[in-house]
Amino acid sequence: MTDVRDVIDYPIAAPEALHPPAEWQELRSTCPVARVAFPSGDEAALLTRYEDVRAALSDPRLSREGLASPDAARVSAGEAEGIFSSPMARALNDEGHERWRRMVGKWFTARRMAALKPGMEAMADRMVDDMLDHGSPADLVEHLAFPLPVYVICAMLGVPESDRDLFKAWSDTFLNMTKYTRPETEAAHGAFAEYMRGLIARKREAPGDDLLSRLMDGADADGRPMSHDGLVATGQALLLAGHETTAGFISMVTAHLLSDRTRWERLLADPSLIRSAVEEVLRYDANGSGFGMLRYVHEDIELAGGTVRRGTTVVCSMASANRDESAWENADSMDLGRSPNPHLTFGAGPHSCLGQPLARTELQAVLGVLLRRLPTLELAVEPGELQRHEGMLTTPLRELPVRW
Image (cartoon, rainbow, N blue to C red):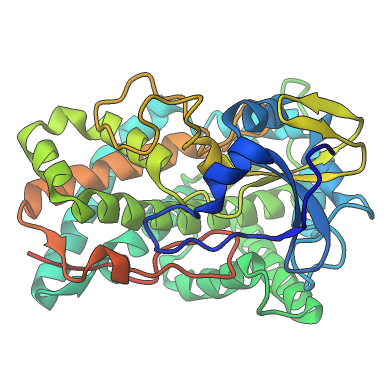
């Protein structure tokens, strides 16, 4: 690596929940390939510029599968090796990445998600009813941002929504970088896999009209069905990604729009901006994409910010890249009509987020319902009082107090 400097503890704390770390701008300017230390103590390279992050996420010489290598950096001391060395990750890798994405991705197209949008809006309406019954002020995370994505992904997969507390506990264990020991993490992986094996066994006996049941009967272009371990891992991965990340996005988008109420008023005046507003807040948010995406470098690679050597673990900060002044006009300003908007919040290249059509559709549905039902919605605390869950790979808001 070029631009050697002191090792920086990573992740870098932000001064407030809705503002970026001050170090980002300095790193992009003076040290775009920086040495960082994870909570485990292992070192990695941090990329902060848009051009470098996009290149790293798209270059086949940097892979996610390589993170299972013994020399890959561990994020948490609770991980035996790399963060992608869990049984769930190994099972998905065994399916073959491109094959798995083809089999699962056809169920996450924008067209299919659009067909689900009326149901999402109807459920959001019912949750707003419950929040109104609770009275003002209320926590939007508790009443809407968390339960709605759980309902949606459980309905898609055919998973009992009543088990959502189990998913939350497992998710917290997998995503926390400092709280859990290796035995606790391994026990959580085992319990989650056992739960999913039991669910899939019941679906084999009585298939339903859900994604897991359809994957059991489906096959790839060569006529091969997904393996049993692949189905278990797929159910785990989609449940985790389908509720945790989207719940964070819902609360974050709402918080940013209400933190400067002229933004909310603009959408009330012109709801046609909802789609572009969602994309702009996804770009603008300082912490919504959390830790960033990890890659393992299989051979030396030259980036605009410097050379990264073979065997290095790279962390791509999409959130910093989305604020790169060289890539965006008025990068630190929120423009609800910004277009085009090729932000990197969902990644880039072959490992970009498979569920991004689902997340986008849920965000647009929720925002439309809130604007229609609660036009007077506002924060019940000062924006600077909002707090995120620290020590997590994702950094959702702890709560979002609102009133109307």
